[in-house]
Amino acid sequence: MTPIRPLQRLQVTDAVRAVGDWVQRRRAIDADPPPPRDADKGPLPDLKVLITAEEAFPEFERLVLAAETSVTCGFRIFDPTTRLLSEEARAIGETWADLIAHVLCRGVRVRMRISDFDPVAVPDLHRTSWQSLRLLRERAAEEGCSDLLDAEVCLHPAQAGRPVRRAFAATARKSLRDIADHLNAQGAARRDDYMKDAPGLGELLDRDENGDLFVQKDAVPPMRPVTHHQKVAVIDRRCLYIGGLDLDDRRADDKDHDRAGSRTWADVQLSLTGPIAAEAEDHLLAFTDEVARRTPIAPSRPGLLRTLSLCATGRNPLQVGPDEGLCEILDRTLEGVAGATDFIYLETQFLRDLHFSRDLARRGARQPDLGLIVVLPSAPEELAFQDARGMDMRFGEHLQARCLEILRRAFGDRLTVVSPAQTRGAAPDGTRAVLCGAPVIYVHSKVSIFDDRLAVVSSANLNGRSHHWDTELGVALTDRAQILHLRDRVMRHWLPPDPDPALLDPATAPKAWRDLAKANRDTQPARRTGYLLPYPWAAPRRFGRPIPFLTQNMV
Image (cartoon, rainbow, N blue to C red; front, side):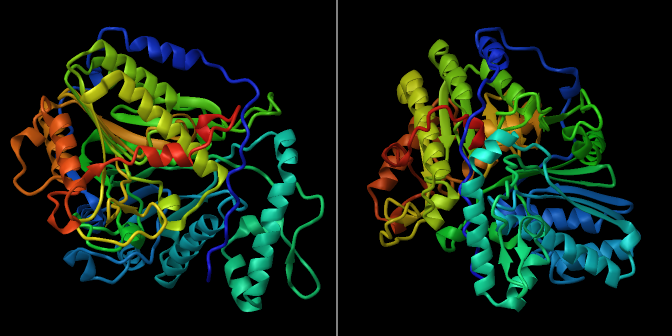
């Protein structure tokens, strides 16, 4: 079925927002580096750095296969029809539904928390989540193991105040009418098949005497702008799988990225063991109650970094987003900024947090020897591959252009910003899916490395949404050997085989990467070495648009 065209994110800002927290964080940039935390002493045991699904999915499969008592997961997207990749898993079936059924039949308890989405803004994602839940439950019932499966679809309870929802009700109703018209045009069978996995739409759409869907004239649909964005699994409270990678075939790329640009997906996941795994499972079993204010947020989960926001209390009727809860990922990342003296490496899907960028710029201005490499996709996924041009897309590109300009003014030639592309040619197609004559490689990683002192790997992008709104989870590495291993793995991924040592040396890497990217730009795609190209600075400046009074946390 043709995907339903989603409503562009409803754009409005909170009337009044407190600034004390980020002012306090900015002051930390001028302070001395904080001492190591007690919870971070010593290396994380058995750490594995997994680059792309080629490495991550088989590792995840082996961990689940080895489970003895429990598997507990929290994902934004978890598709049970995802193909299995490892030889061990393929010996028992073809898809993740087969793998889950296999461990259930062995008596392993499986707990699954799958994110839900606003059914008006992103109906296809909403439907995908509920479809995944149905498939898991049906398979467990077929195997007679329903009692061992605890699966839920979880929608963040925060929503905009009623005056805001009323102001945008006409826009939301139009989107609902478009959805209804699209489904009605598919015929009764396909329409009803879609709706059985879209309960949120079922609550907003009525049916006439013929069974056709329609929207009530004065309906005021909800606005739920916050999601659970974490990607984490815990096996037997002993093994932890965590990072930026969800589970579906869209993300099943390898390190060669030799496929259509729209099928590429660069990501980083970690696998490790130790007490931190039990802390992560406790988080997964508690976060839905915490964000709904049914229970207090746990003040500390040693070894973990969280972003948790709370459903609004209703005291501000003009509020769009949630109340702030915990910003541990941002706080720890800013500690890394505050202590950095030589080299920072950032690999991220988005760089849109103006406050973070200003903090980073201030540190760069104070540390004349501090170099910075930023690896970004050349364009957001929806813009590159779907040519989406809504307000949210334009505002996000505007923020990223501003953030990068802030860093350029502070760092000068100590800053290198690069985007990867494949080493094969592609004809221009009028979209940003082609960079310097080659199909882009889509970057989804969330890795921040500060000298050899601290690294943060998480589900969080460097934007206001991940820093303040969405549910995110990550870990901090403080063991020098592990940080150096992580840095070497993620940097080598983009470089030619047997790279020049200058490309890996923190003192020379920013210039060496910039020179390599420029040389690749001036070379035919098939003759390029590595994947690096200069980031297209002008494109987001041309496309981006400021939206007055809009909070950056929306995008």
